[in-house]
Image (cartoon, rainbow, N blue to C red; front, side):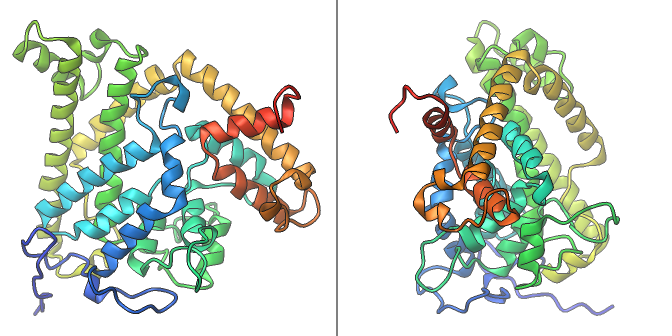
Length: 402
């Protein structure tokens, strides 16, 4: 087969793009046509719009594992997103992919998370079950296409097709995977306006962004768990995958303070996972004879990946963290309270939408209707941990000021 390769273009650091990279000049554009920026390419402009939007700022006070008031040094959704962006950029630059697109996707990937981490999402999903459920990826799409109200000409951020596609599909196709899989309502609604090709895998940059998310939260949740005292250093020496790096840190730096040893072990763990992604992805590109960005979507399987051996070890590490960190009794206690806060807020606002702030109340219909439920869900999903606790106090504690 005679393959015509896309000409190599300079990246943001001056090296050539790979022929399978997403090029901004080949973007499918925006739903609402806009003049090009004189100083930024399309994906850089997407990144900047994400950074400046209100939903991104609110990530500062949304939980990663620990609720914001438990300490100043633990990751929040904001700091996690920045770390994911750094890892995604580094991998993309090494592969010759578009680090601007990967950075935009990494910064946006958690925009749809409600307060209180996965406990808040689980509670909202239960509350919304009669009304179509709740999914944080779908909520992120709803935020960037509708809920952000910054521009005079359109709702949302009017991001490029490639950024929207990667935001929705970074974990893979959403259709054609079995009749039992229900597409979230926000994604179904948007698909009527713009075809994001939900049956295919996304760009290589979106795939890298998803892998960077795995790398970041595995490594950094270990760091936070150890510093919070929920994980023990000796315990981590026996952990799948990570244990070897804690042993190595002890052997290489005897007598060094535990905090420095934790940093060394986590740094080495990140390095291993990044190197593995680079090696496996390069091998996949050569094996599949990938010739352009469109071919990446047509493969029918991920192009960017961990090696099978490391993927198995990462799953074992995730299971370890699930048991010893995410389901630690201290985390369970806080998250049980968090679920109650979200559930009680939802129930109260759904029954009495007149309690909502005016701009939200005016969007509602009759109490307990599907339309009102979606507005209440949007309002709660946009809350920070702190604001959710304050709203709950205002509604349920008469001693607090209105």
